[in-house]
Length: 66
Length: 562
Ligand SMILES: Cc1cc2nc3c(=O)[nH]c(=O)nc-3n(C[C@H](O)[C@H](O)[C@H](O)COP(=O)(O)OP(=O)(O)OC[C@H]3O[C@@H](n4cnc5c(N)ncnc54)[C@H](O)[C@@H]3O)c2cc1C
Ligand code: SF4
Ligand code: SF4
Ligand code: SF4
Image (cartoon, rainbow over all chains, first blue to last red; front, top):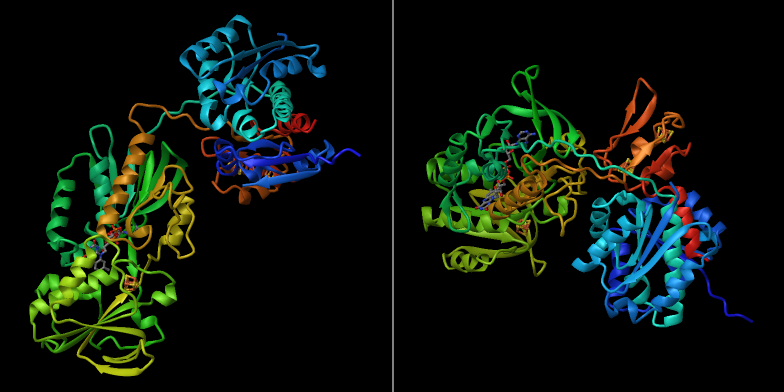
């Protein structure tokens, strides 16, 4: 059986969590490639349409961080 | 015009090149099925942000007539503006470009080269699909007014006025009292070096009076302020004749309205009448600065004086930072008046935050002043019942009590906060934009808070804040320069808006207003920060967050999930 690799979309705020993810990158922290980051200008931008659309496109999980 | 999508992959020296397979990325993205009918230019470069790299990119955009650009490189937080600036040198609108962060978010965090390469392809694909849905946006350049309104003529407002005013920048300084000076005008000697407060103040006041670029309005308060950084329309009113208003224009507003002292009489533990010999330290400072000594209402000098720290601190829930040191100062001055006076400090905590305070404390201790550490106290007239730190109940009878009461927000704080659309901290003082990284700004661009209005502060800190806010204004409002408001703002589509007003409450920046004639909401683009908070709140889906529209994000999401 194929190993289950969840597809995760992370909506990250440009000013805080996206900057934190950049920092994780700069410190060469390993991050599972299943996480796909989409940058937004504020996590409050994420509404129900975006969430549903993301699941519709095959996401197994969504991270909204801000 | 047919679409011509340029995709430029930066190697970032070995940073990206050693972690992913650049050739494979180029090959894979060239073969993407849904781009078969599009003309693609796919190239890589060693270091796109170098002088040579930038020239290369500029030439490529021009020579190939690129209509949509994707740069796969480092974080947009590092170089988004770098590449937007390159677009501006070409025919390409900078909003027809998208940056894809394959360094921090891919190469550096994915040790497996094959996985990293695949992820980079997904991400770039996301950028390619997104950019096709992007729209050209135009920057606006607005005239901006370098002049500044300062509300409050205490030491904070005066210092900011003197720092800011100059040939190309007028300052309007409004003060609700008939004189400038604020609390400092009532103090005797100033810590730490014990210069006479009034001397310091008189010097500042005369500098202000002699400065032709500072317009002082005493007996004046703010009536209204509307606008945004660079363009505020302001109305001020005469306190004695509220009908008499004056209109002013300014680019920034500095709130320097100071603080008040909590009245100890409102506390349950204080049973004191007005004619009891119980004073707050400010009244004592005033007595000392006008008559040079403390005396009781019967004209006699007190034999026993108690100074009580932290009065109201548990009730307000914060330390007022300066009362410990000014009570030490007052005790020292009383001892200097007469060494016969028995002076006792009843304290709970000893807050000595500045580098010179410890030394001053040692000096005061050497002057025969008694220090008693207490847990609680109840005051009846000038009789004190207190619990010492060994939990023993004690009594003390003195001739005069001096209280170090909590510094609290002024009564008008809330009203002014509403008028200027700035937030309040849970303590009731104005809230700074960010305590550590932006301590004198507020949530509204162009409005700053300094001094006692910001929270309990001594004069040194007040001066620092006044100068910090001035520095911010110097860099944000450069005389003669236009300001460029954010372009990635939200827009309300007139045809869809039902006028329900939901969005008005959602916007934390007060950027949305209601047009009564049209019956719809409108975004003031000069104030909007483009956070997109309002988008999801609109029941009719009529708000579009430019450059972060639903179709654009849908495209990116779809591709990164492949
Ligand atoms: C007893 C005591 C002793 C102190 N001793 C020292 C000391 O020795 N050394 C030291 O460094 N600090 C000392 N301090 C602290 C010092 O007083 C403050 O740091 C300083 O006063 C803060 O200045 P400010 O201009 O922010 O506020 P304020 O002095 O309170 O001035 C605010 C001004 O704004 C005006 N204003 C208020 N609301 C409005 C409005 N809505 N419209 C127009 N104008 C308005 C007020 O009338 C006032 O003139 C002491 C404080 C106290 C209470
Ligand atoms: S400065 Fe001293 S007296 Fe004032 S609240 Fe803080 S600890 Fe209490
Ligand atoms: S929430 Fe939507 S429909 Fe309601 S006023 Fe705002 S823009 Fe109009
Ligand atoms: S995008 Fe943010 S700042 Fe702009 S109107 Fe909407 S909520 Fe307000």
